[in-house]
Image (cartoon, rainbow, N blue to C red):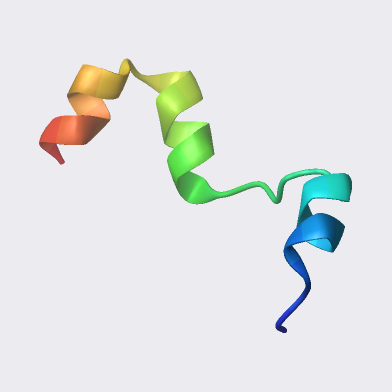
Length: 33
């Protein structure tokens, strides 16, 4: 789905796997992956 930038900015960010990973382990760790 293509949505205007302003709409995406207003809406809460989706839960992305990368976001979850960054929370679980340090960025340096998931950067290596």
